[in-house]
Structure formats: C-alpha cells, structure tokens
Amino acid sequence: MQRNQTDVQYFIIKGISDNPKLQFPIFLLVLLIYLITVCGNITILLACRDPRLHTPMYFFLANLSIVDICYSTVSLHKILTNFITGDTTVPFFACMTQMYMFGSLQGLELMILTAMSYDRYVAICRPLRYHMVMNIRTCAIMASSCWVLGFLQVLPHVGMVYNFSCYFSIEINHFFCDIVPVINISCNDTSLVEMVFFIQALFPIILTPFVLTFVPYIFIIVAILKIRSGTGRRKAFYTCSSHLTVVILLYTTLFSQYLTPNLSSTLESKKCFALFNTAAVPMLNPIIYSLKNKDVKKALIRSVGIIKLS
Image 1 (cartoon, rainbow, N blue to C red):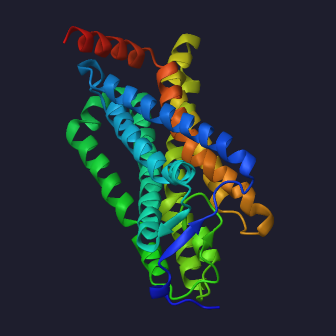
Image 2: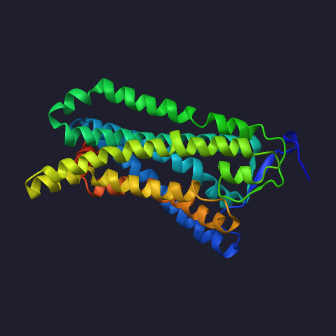
Image 3: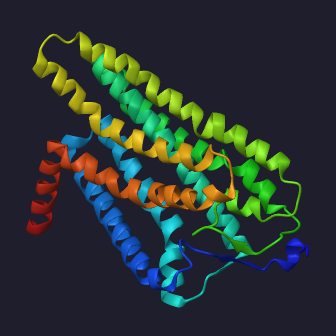
C-alpha cells in the first residue's frame, strides 16, 4: 500500500536488535561509549586551550573534537531516548533533519582529517616553510571551508529523499535515520537519488577526501625513509601515527558501510559497521591522540591546575 508523503507523519526506528534481552546491555554500552566520547573530546578541547598548543595541528584537532561530539550525539541519541521513553517513533521532519546533520558531520569529519593530513605533510616534508605555509589565515580558511562544504555537500540527495511521495513501510531498519535504509523503504523510483548518492559518496564525500588524505602520506613515508638517524625516523613517524590510525579506522568502516551492495544478508553487518563508525571512532579519537601525545597530557595537567587555582 502506497502512502502519500503528507500521510507519513513519522517513522519507526527498528534499532540495533529486536531481542528484548539485549536492549538493556545495548543501552548501557552505548551510554558508556557516548559518555567516554563526550568527556574525551571535551578533555581534548580543554588541552587545546593551552597557549603552548596554539598550533595548526591542535587547531584542527579541536575542530575534530567538536565534530565528534556533535556526530555521536546526532547518531546515538535515539538509541538512548528509545530505551528511556520506550518511544521508537521519529517525526518525518526530525528524521530528515537527522539524516542531513549526520551526512554533513560525516563529510565534515573527513574534510578536517584531510586538512590534518596536509598539515602533517607540510610539517615533515617542508619543515623550513611550515610556519609560513600553515599560518593563522591559511588554517582559518581551511577550517571554514571544511565547515561550509560539509553542510552543503549532502543537500542534493537529502532534498531528493525529502520529496519522496510514498513508502512501502514506515519502519527503518537502522538505529537512526540514515539515507540508505530510508531509500530502501521508499516505493518511489529511487534510481536517480541512488546514482546521485553513489556519485557523491564515491567522489566528493568519501573518495576525494580519501585520496587527498592518503597521497600526502606517500610523500611523508618517502621523506621519513630518507631520514638517516633511527631516532629522527621514529620522531617523524610519531608526529603522524595517531592521525593515520584514526584515518584508517574511519575509512575502513565507511567503505564497508556505504560502498558494498545493499543485500539483505549485509544489512545487519552494515548496522554493526555504522555503530562502530558513529560510536567507537569518535570515542577512540581522543584516546588515540591523548594517550600517545605528551604535549596534550602536559597541557591537560596545566589546565586542571589552573582550574583548581581559580
């Protein structure tokens, strides 16, 4: 039975699992991950307030922390509210808004990671020109461009989904309103939006940032291998290893989530990849950066000391 868009007042979010026995453990796990994510990224933001960390790398890291807090909040809040209230419905407009915000923040995160990759390339491959190239103006332009492009690049396909006129079902087989599961329940001709989404995902959203992120690392690795001293090589690799770890984790889950066939046998596994992408990666970012970074730990200790004195 077809439904007019005006009749679709809400969608039902199926969630991660239908098993009632798993609802409470899933709630606790997601709540714990969310709290760690928020606290960890706020810790990074506090550390980046230190004047000694007012450098391009920590400027972009602070932007990444803001995005991660918003990213995890947008995608995980429905799991938490569903369990607390028992209400699995989401209004139509709220679903479209969540879809837009999630896609924007996801693209924004990839762009900021690309900017961080370029920063590491200049620092290692062009060290004598680093402060001239990565000046305040350049960093501000790069960051603002990431934010603007991030919130513009999802408008075409989200606008097309918003104008869908009917749905086979109002139940979304996901734990939030993502574009792929919403397309799957539409009885409209979705070939155009699927093509637009695939082209955007393949090029401006995922593939282009992927290339622009990893190509600098080819030059970075070559530059590191040319360093004669073992200590110098280790120090150079140390400055970019955290960023590279985060990038590999994120792109592995994204390729598995969006650039694989939408077969029924893969839908549940895609939800697992989505959960890792939206929950684990934002949680791991501050852990990876702070545990391996002595400057961040020292800045945090200084920030805590200042707070106590005040």
